[in-house]
Every structure is written in structure tokens, then in C-alpha cells.
Length: 367
Ligand code: GLY
Image (cartoon, rainbow, N blue to C red; front, side, top):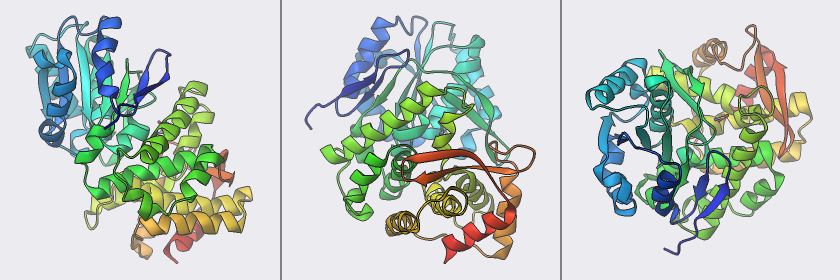
């Protein structure tokens, strides 16, 4: 594969994207004097098997690192698992100058960032995202978290990593449904933040894009474009008091649906699959509340429906969803606030929608 790695930003969290990004890990560690008290790599069972050998092959600094392993999936994003990791690190003599390297998808980077943010009041960490969702969203922007019960991401800090390395090498190891799930975040960045990216995506049907090898230059260009949009939102509004909320497009109903599907275990949804459904609902609300033209609403629904199968929801499920929306952290005083769009790429934040409108949006999704 041709090496195409480029740096997106040189601010305090350098972000590298493209083939060869991993080759920059050692230089970042050296130039920032990281890991003087040892390096720890956080993996899950999958990334230990499939991704760790790839990292060790590209970074000499990692060869002496100690490995911390957790189970894959949301079950690991808990305070108990974080406590277990803190104890492991204490036992292994990790100090304030130790470096934690998060090698995995969104669960590993959220959990690892959280562990790093609190261990000895904060140690440095790097994110090496191995899933497309991690590469386009979770690993960027310094949000760290664990779940509270079944409600996602309720406990955490804003705590920036010392570097993010987004290398297509890892995507080759991903199952197709995880690639598809991650692609939802690219579509989100386009719809919420950049009409030009939306036009680039629409030049191809979603199934055709998803059948490209992830190392394909067009696929890589889509990732880099989405990462740039996300990074710009983070730079404008790191603590999410305003503009960064554009990144929540599709996530209000999406999170509730994801929580519901995981709790019921009837048909668990991946994060991006839930967000795709949430984006169809949010686009309908955008038509109602922000003047999104019918033509754009149709385009968005057709585009997403070609890549994501509909999730069946009956009356009971709709009521349960409404209950879960109350816990969404974007809500204030129990009212649901949405990030909507007035046109693709033109976001409108903090739009209050009432339960009747939300129910109409879910009906539109189910039609
Ligand atoms: N995942 C949304 C954000 O980072 O703000």
C-alpha cells in the first residue's frame, strides 16, 4: 500500500490519517518525551489478536510495553473495569510519566481515556483507533467516558490525548457490519457540517462505497475529510457549549435506540446503525422545525436506507424510546433538544421537539 499519511493538525493533539500513520508513533513519543515511566497498551481480546501485531510491527517503542486487556464491547465501559485497570497499573508500578496507548474501537478509547484522565490525577495517552467509528469519531476530541448502568457515556471528562493515529491497516481486519456502522459517522459529518462532503458521498451509492477496500484512496479521502470536519468542531468548541453539538446529529434518537436495542438484546444495534436510523428521524424533524426541503429529506432517506436495514419498532418500543430520551445528556429540564439541519451541511443546534413530533419522526422512519 502506498504511504499517504498526512497530519491534520499540529496543535497539542496531532492527528495523523492515512497509510503509514503508525510510522509517526515513535516520533511523537520521542518529541513529547512520553512514557518515561513505562508504556501500557490497552486492548480488547479482538484487537490483541488482530491489531497488536500490526502495531508492534510498526513501532519500536511498543515492544517493551505492558499489555492491559479487557473484554470487547460496552460491557467493559464501567467504573468497575476502570478500577480493575487502575489496580493493575498500580501493581505494575505505573507512574505519572507512564503512557497509556489505547488500541481499539470507541469502547477502548473512551475507557482508556477515562482511565488515563484519573490515574494519578492524569497521565498522557495516545489513541490508535482500529474501528472506522473510532477513526472518524470516538478517538478525536478528548471526550472520555464510562457508562452508568445502561445509559451510555454518563460519567467522564474532557481530557485530550497526546496524539491520534488513524491507519487503514486496521480496517482490513474489520467485519463488514462494523465498517458500515463507522461509515454512518462519515455521513453524519457531511450532513451536519459540510455540504461538499455530502455531494462527494452522493456521487456514489452507499453499497458501492462500502464494497471498496478501506485502503482505497477515495475511502481514505472520505475518512480524512470527515476527521477534518470533526476536528474543526472540536477546536471551535472543545467543551461542547455550542457548535460541537453539530456532531450530535442523529445521536439523540440514535443513542436511545442503541440503548434500547442493547438492553432488550432482541436485535442489538451497532452504534452507527442506530445513528443511521437517528439521522433519518432527525432529518424528518429538520423538515418540520428547520425547513429542510423535501428533496433533501428524500435524498437522505434513500441514501441511508440503501446501506442500513430498517429496525423494527412497535408501539411499546416507541414508548420505551421516549423514556430513554429523557436521559439523553443533550436534554435540559426533560425537554428533548436536537441538532437539526436546514440544508445538508448547515446545522441548527438546540431545537426543542415535543413528544408528538418525535413520534411522527419515528413513524416516518418506519414507513
Ligand atoms: N461524538 C461527538 C463528539 O465528540 O462531540
